[in-house]
Length: 377
Image (cartoon, rainbow, N blue to C red; front, side, top):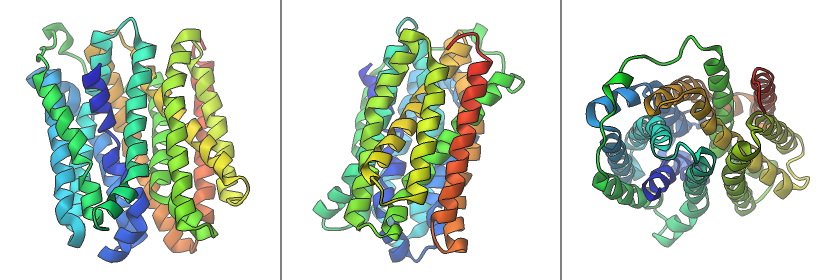
């Protein structure tokens, strides 16, 4: 359980730690908003394209050893950011390595849960998603302060997140490596399953919204007239409020068998709060930032549960999860880039955030379709 939590904590800081510093980094490196958004988009694209490799690597190397290698790759990528202060190529290259490590680890951690916690899925996924939310919130909340503490050098503030990755590497390297049964080796990803596509579509929308906001919501608030400190505090609040929803909703989903109803509720909350951030950023901003974090944090945690109920063996769960991550992240990687390009072309964040609100409504509709197509909840 400790190994699972430590791995989960390392799946987001490499991306969310950039958000509080992104405008400063873009200015110092002379990058447009479209180019600087690649630091978010490329990891997400890697997380999509490389996810199908996870089951194959697990068959060849063993699940535990493969996850240990992923933690090592994430640590290496974050240490490379020490040299990114004067090189946009190093910064973007480190983003690709971060995405590669996350891409392979994500599906295997779902299989790890199915193998060791088959009778406690809801409770364990709650802790797993809480770990991811803690890492994401830590990256968003602590990086700016750490950068100040380290003399104002943002490269040091970003590289600091290599420490928990190194700790996870040490723990996973000590776990006994267990081979997958040969009987599970055959079979590919469930590309022909309509429900797998619905789940992947929902995942794509919620991930796209999360990473677009992780990249640009601070800039949106600041452009609207809020101070940079207030804008960062609203983003931090959103990430922190995502913690209880990431933990509570998977538990409720299993306890009362209402996972699809909860998905629908998260979509509605995210749509409403994004609409208010778009149209009225000065009206109760703390309320809407918190609700947005609750809705997106909950929808992400619940989407992690879905493959666990659609497949029956650890490797099959890894395959469903790999398809969800592959199709989902491959589509989601476009959202932060298009948001940045939309800002460059339109001159403000109003139009891009209107489009994000429309995507939240589409996510809500997919949640309704999943609920309608299920015999339960």
